[in-house]
Length: 381
Image (cartoon, rainbow, N blue to C red; front, side, top):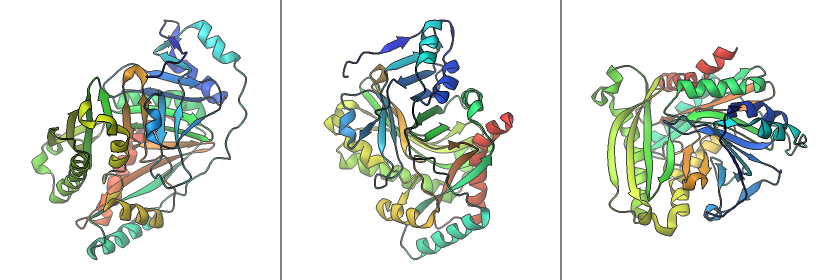
């Protein structure tokens, strides 16, 4: 990885979470995150406001930082890399705390927050029925429709506590908050896109959602629609790996995986870094968006989603995470997330529509998914 002058702080004065209010107040470009099944909380802060726009994923080969990529490559939303001029892990010294406080307030560096339009039940049911007609006509095998749920209130001063509660409630999720320009997002996503550890990589197929209970942990109790939806995603990943000649990968699943109060169907794919060779960046491009967040066929479903959804997904269902930090890449699909606005939160949820979908059931599934974040936000209200 490219060498860069960094200030790495791991001392014992106070929690790294204490810097979050400062970063928000001073409009720093920053991210704070906790990896799945880990306890370490890391905050990376960029000292200036020259945000690095990524035109090609090859650019991250010799870089490090926090990568944020949108759902669609063909929009005005761009991919960015937050530069880790300062890295704080778990704790921060008084000296470092005071140094952050002494940094001048940044000028507003965006063009104004965009508030997405809420999707009501009647509108979402209409969209599902229209999608089902298209599927019945043979246009699609599956389309993933998303909706926005608005929670009104000023939550910026409560983001530190929301982050803490997400970490406590979802120990196996990737919990994060980032801010750049006029974007501020927070979430707890259960879905890796692609992650590396030493010489190994893994990705997952994640589709199908039920509330957590012991009965639902038994995969034999899941119905054909749910199993079929998971199979679409698995097959899509297998096709991409075959196309990139990533052979001899290890596959585990499908199996049930608990994620807080939910259960998902999941299949794991493991392979070695040398199998991907110098094609890792293009492999990531090929994997995203998966049929778990878009549909099949992918390009056609993407066009349909842009036509039927009233909101721009922006960074919902994109991907994000640290790259190069500790010589690892940890990228996750941005699900179970919300955009933080001045006087509201915009929660994004979605579900896969297939020929076996029942509109009311699909609406209920999105309500269950929304509870992941709502249950935390309600503790603040």
